[in-house]
Length: 412
Image (cartoon, rainbow, N blue to C red; front, top):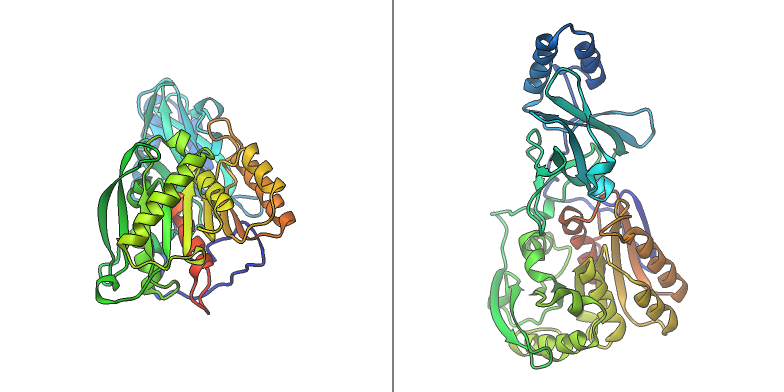
């Protein structure tokens, strides 16, 4: 089951189902011929002289070359394992910055192994955790982990990523050449309301040109990022081919002035409804009703997706907020208004307690509580991850199956 951490739902539930395409292999635990890290460390500390210590370090690093770091070892704590991060190189100090510490390297310094060029940091994580990180050398140089080949794209360039043994990488994000693929076309839209111009990308399902059918539509905030970083086209191809969702159209809309547009902006909602949706309904064979229109967004885009559905439930009947930045104004709005006929998907990482100073985990939990009290239909998912495209892309399928899942097919 892909969602292993904490989940709850009001009126909506999901069970497991087999997949025809198997998930990618999970990370390998630290195995022979390399010794356990603590045993290796004892050998180094017991060795006499700088040359002998460094030789043991070099042998150990050579042993790890084809295994990837961090080293993953067992833990005495139930439900947890230990990850050991390593850096070998000339430095006076090294540190870890990542999802596990709010990207603050001052909180996770690495220990220097005396008389060698090796630094290490060990910490326990949940067995299904997956997190992004970088190494920070000498307090100012941020680098990918040279001993870890796994990376995750982000808006600020790639990060290193690691996962614990029970994490299952999402198979749907991969490109499968043997299945039908949709087409992506673009057009430019100039807004009379916002007085801006942006390029909109539209995913059309594989059978669109050959049929006369009408289709549900998913509208995506930060659309270019969902295409580049989340590979949302691969995900939709996969789900359609697996027959877990019907063919859908995906409209990927980029922001122009992201902060002002996404922060509960009525003018942006007006632009979206009267210009974006109206244009899509005119250009494509859509199902023009709220039940067949969904919204998707991450972080501030998640706020925009939830706010837009709350204020225009006549247009959007489905909404997904991923790590949504739900400020007090949004929580007050939903508390003070009548329940709307909208189905929500909400997901957040347990490591999102300090995202640019905001505790997104707490605000998502508050929104869950309010939605429960108001009687909303929603699914809420917590995972042991951070504020990352690695987390968001792995939850898109959950949102789409909730919105339009084919009868008899459910989330993993």
